[in-house]
Image 1 (tube, rainbow, N blue to C red):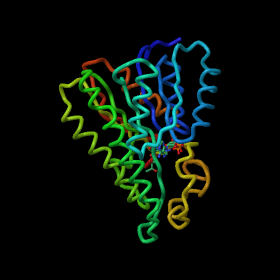
Image 2 (image 1 turned 60 degrees about the horizontal axis):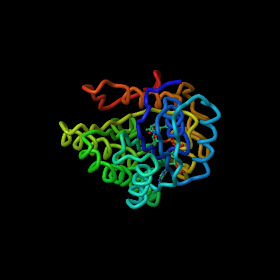
Image 3 (image 1 turned 45 degrees about the vertical axis):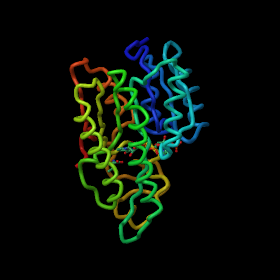
Length: 263
Ligand SMILES: NC(=O)C1=CN([C@@H]2O[C@H](COP(=O)(O)OP(=O)(O)OC[C@H]3O[C@@H](n4cnc5c(N)ncnc54)[C@H](OP(=O)(O)O)[C@@H]3O)[C@@H](O)[C@H]2O)C=CC1
Ligand SMILES: CC(=O)[C@H](N)C(=O)O
């Protein structure tokens, strides 16, 4: 039984599938008190059952609660309910894993998908920071971890809005991190390359963009890719643990993690 995260209160948003679900497994396994949020409450409830069955010796705790990261009220309510549930004044760590990605060619103007990308990926990030930073600064401790992407530091064709949204979070994080130096509050990004088996590209509709990229519409990430070797969601969960395990005088600000053979 691991006690690495014992008494750590963690909010994890975007936990209902893919990378977020893998992070929930890891946090629970290591004894964290974890509020898991997303829009699909049924998936969160299933996740609780899965984790409690898989790690019967864990002394962790999972608290599933609906959360829409695009809504300021919803994120604030999620964080307040977490504090109430675990009886604390401030959250130790917020992990924002909520995200959407659409391959689109700019000339095809799939503007609803662009709007959603900006709402979830950018506004989601500011909503998470706004909901916790004041209390964290007062408590003189806290971590904000955003799952961005290698698209936050590299340019990929047919992903202009997505890359820009991830770069927004990188810049937001870096400037906030520097602003909060000395307060005890730290901000981190994890920048994964392709991670297999997640639902991220299932709702894509721009066939032309998808074909150019060699990805299959309606399939989980990795299915139909020519390159077989991809990251596993648990690799990203391990990167989260690396940040959380660092000694108090160390801040692992960013982790760029890609499949070994990704160009
Ligand atoms: N898979 C990959 O190759 C990579 C993924 N990433 C990033 O990792 C993160 C997770 O993606 P991944 O696991 O792959 O994809 P999934 O589609 O499997 O997971 C996305 C998660 O985001 C949640 N989400 C989406 N919209 C909202 C919303 N409005 N409010 C709250 N939660 C929301 C979903 O929950 P629900 O629908 O229930 O609300 C789900 O839990 C994303 O930020 C993505 O950009 C980064 C690099 C590589
Ligand atoms: C740019 C990418 O495709 C990256 N793997 C991601 O999903 O964010």
